[in-house]
Image 1 (cartoon, rainbow, N blue to C red):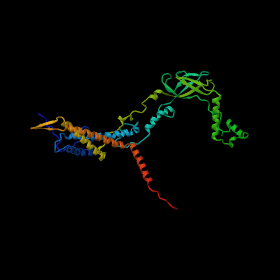
Image 2 (image 1 turned 45 degrees about the vertical axis):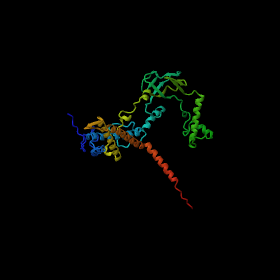
Image 3 (image 1 turned 180 degrees about the vertical axis):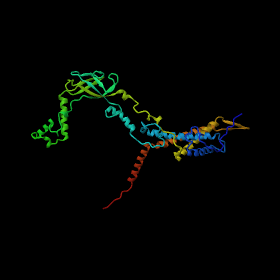
Image 4 (image 1 turned 135 degrees about the vertical axis):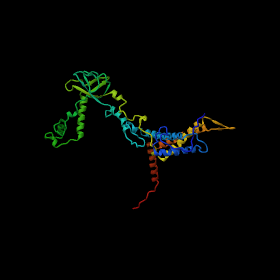
Amino acid sequence: MAKNIPIWPGSSSFFPGDTPFGIYDNDTSFQTDIEKTSVWCARRLGYPITDIELQDINLYTCFEEAITEYGAQVNTYNIRDNMLNLYGAATGSSNFSGQKISANFGGQIELAEEYGTEAGSGGNVTYYTGSLSMTADVQDYDLTDSNVVTYESGTPGTDSIEVKRMFHDPPPALVKYFDPFVGTGLGSQQMLDTFGWGQYSPGVSFMMMPVYADILRVQAIEFNDQIRKSAYSFELINNRLRLWPIPNGANYTKVYFQYIKKADRSNALKAPTGTISDFSNVPYQNVTYTNINVVGRQWIRRYTLALAKEMLGYIRGKYSALPIPNAEVTLNGADLVTAAQTEKEGLITELKEILDTMSRQMQLERKSAEATSLQEQFNKIPLKIYIG
């Protein structure tokens, strides 16, 4: 005995729990619109001229899916348009749906930090300090030798490091050229003698040299030491450090350097856990149906109809024809499925195109074109001639 399954009777009463997921069931606007949309879809499908082989829960399912699809498209657009501003934000219990996302430089600065690490001007990799104990008349040293090298962090020869800066420089020129305002420096006295004021004391009481004179004299001292004396320099090849001039043990006992651990630089997981890393964990939740405007609700109704049409087409497509006395009735299941799929694709394309025109880039381009057009109009306005 065949089971008698009731079909759409012409009206329905919605109760929370009648939809598969129940996402919007407690929304009062949803409860009102779901019944009206179900009646509208049934009538658009031919009821009551023809029976609609669907139940109310089928239409409720289509309505819920249409809202969810609308929200997914809007959220996808928002994630794509704001992704650079969202990287690194906390996921937690936040819900970005319906929220204005403020533009920021967080993503760009994070990218720039990698360059800052290499340039030694900041970055996100820790700089450590190490020291090398020098020996008189020894020019070459092995940075993996723990007997002469001390690392702030890590083990010589085990942790792979990269030396970023070597503090092996000559004494600064200012130790030879004192502040001229003190009046006791050799450079200051020479300049006083040049002006014929060397016999006066103290010279600082009546002369102030310009800063550029200090800079030029410092440069002269540095160039003198670099050209006429053994220049301070070093060469680092494969952990072998060579120093110039050869240490004599009189002035310096240690050379300090800064380094990073290569493992720190290569670590791709610098950001703390629980932050936005990609499209999949951006905390956009289901949209609130009450907040959807009339434009969005009209799209949802049209998409609900397309889904209902597709569902009805699959049901009628189970049999291509039904026998009746002395004839048979041909069903339009295939036509309904084809038409429904075309309508769904068209609605998705329409929504994506609308959202694309709302992007920051498109809005800026539109405002630029508007400003240009407005300027052209102003340029065509005749200017008044004033006669004095």
